[in-house]
Image 1: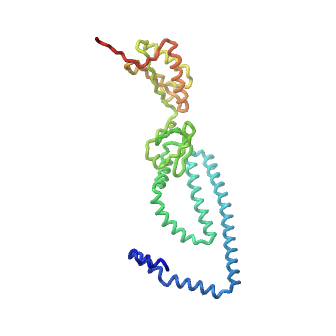
Image 2: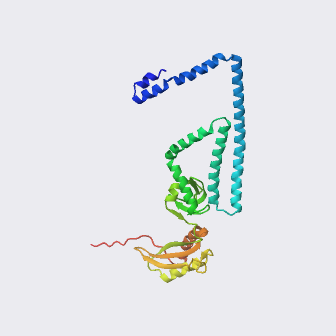
Length: 313
């Protein structure tokens, strides 16, 4: 063999490899094959090759049929899982996670069945996959971490599908949780995929966990405005919004307006109101606009930043 001298000049290990390949095992097998070819008539040899090709073609056809039927069954089984969980009122997060996990397992079984149909020894293949799986697992440690993170999210349920969350620098509505990642849709309708490993180990703000939320906002008015009149007018504005809650709602309290700070150029009032979580943004934007348009009607002005400069001769 032409590469044996080259291997022998590199390292002792290369010499051992060269000796292994230079043994009589390969020569013996090659001689046996050549002996069979010499002793077999050409016609019989061609017939044997055609027969083998036909047998292999039949196996390929059967494997293809198994693939088509198996893929169809996997899709049907996936839909059956979704229907079963829906009938029992299961959480959508659990449904999507179980679906992705079961689908991955079924695809692996289908591939193993196809390989076995082609005549490949699945026992040796399984051992090879087990050995390779360890190496792949070490190389894909991040994926394993994401899988474990998905289990943690499923077990502790810091959020569920449909919740509005903020995590990893992104905020949006949770669309689904699969075995390695979580998909959220942002306010501007962008799809963001977050890895479960980092998500489960990081800080998560779930804005939909509680049924009600408090809106805290401030408004600055000019010095000289009547504080009592400002508070009264803001409370009147708040009273016109039906979606603002009061103390009759469990966990909420009546709207509050207080003078919170006297700044350099303005007097600041703090406004606190309670709303349902689903109404948070709508009421927050409405409140800002209502205060901006209605307070000036009562001769309550908003100040501009200003600096008094005194010049001495």
